[in-house]
Amino acid sequence: MATFMFKRVLIANRGEIALRISRALRELGVEVCIVHGREDRLSLPVRFSDFAIPLYRSNPLDSYLDYEAVIQAAKDVGAEAIHPGYGFLAENASFVRRCEEEGITFIGPSAEVISLLGDKIEARKAMEAAGLPVARGSDEAVDDPEIARGLAAEIGYPVIIKAAAGGGGIGMQIVHDSSAFESALHLCQSRAQSAFGDNRVFVEKFIEGAQHVEFQVLADGENAIHFGERFCSIQRRHQKLLEEGPWLSEEIRADIGSRVCNGARAVGYRGLATFEFLRDKNGEFYFLEVNPRVQVEHTITEMITGVDLVKLGICIAAGETLSMSQDEVRFSGHAIQCRFNAEDGLHFVPSPGKLWDCHFAGGRGVRVDTHAHIGYEMPGCFDSLLAKLIVWGQDRDEAIAKMKAALMETTIIGVDTVIPLHKAILDEPDFIARDVTIQYLEDHPNLLR
Image 1 (cartoon, rainbow, N blue to C red):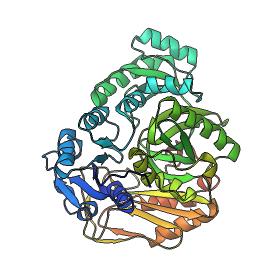
Image 2 (spheres, rainbow, N blue to C red; image 1 turned 135 degrees about the vertical axis):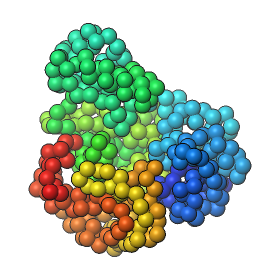
Image 3 (tube, helix red, strand yellow; image 1 turned 180 degrees about the vertical axis):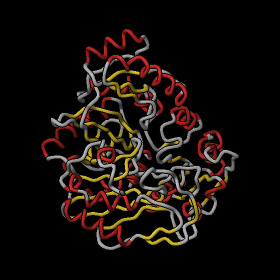
Image 4 (cartoon, one colour; image 1 turned 45 degrees about the horizontal axis):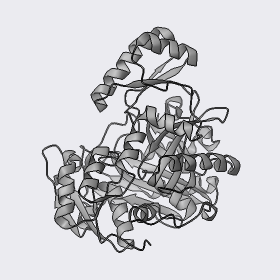
């Protein structure tokens, strides 16, 4: 534990991640405060908090996005720090600056680092300078269609056009030949402007047959260590569904791990970060982005390393330096996480409603992170994540068998979920053979048919 620890921390989030942060704070002896909208007034993280501050807004999202109200709530209850979790304000540099101005600790990196990493062009340049591998692409925003088309021809088709301020796959356009380039460029610029208020885009080589691999990093502003990789290729609409780890050989893990730590040190990173990569069919890695926050799938790393990442992130924010060295990070077994989204598994249409029955699996090596319970009203205005089921096995085969057993034991009645899809994936031959790319669901359209 840090020599100094906060007395009181405000959680600016909801759902399972708010409950996860609350547990970490309690273990550190910290009082738990939380803001909440009308829809979450009876939720578990609100009920289990020491101080709950209602921020009711006509638009439910504003209860968690109005950062002046969040900061005022922290001041009203005397919270010394704010934990943003993921989503909402977690990557909002303006919010972080306001926290700094008010003398409130933001549990995460500085506003300058968030701004740098939030600009995909600048992040790409910074990480390339730090020695991370990047795909061929433009070093600056492209605007002129003729110049951009010439750059695409030089890179070689297929290429992908991305929003500089983007995230979550919004606006990305894959282009296979020059005839479709200009319309794709204008479409990406338009969507980037609409979604992010910034129409800057850049062009990059599209990695065909890619796998999505990410590395977990913890840094204290000067030093950094990594906790290995997670494999996250099974996705719908660029959102992950099933994640697992470890995935790489020890040699490759050591190489890429060393590079991501160099990247964290190069920007003076403090806190938890996830460095994301695409890996092509030849095994080459290409830097994608840095997520400057705790990830939904941090649970996998916790299962295979035995560390509490959320607690470590809080301790760093409280002023502690890294409490362990890279040599002390140990990996054991294999872990798989299945996200339970309240949506149907065929078309991924949200399925809000009341949980009339709800039972989650247990037993050795089984973990459930959820805010769900019998009688819970799943709102339709927020992300559809209802629960995360994580299992640990001595190897991948045991982890798959354990996950299948845990899914059979799970009951959720009242909303549709993607549990049937997870069951189908776990039995699918390509998944079992580790023959998985980011196109997995598109390549297996009949999983539920």
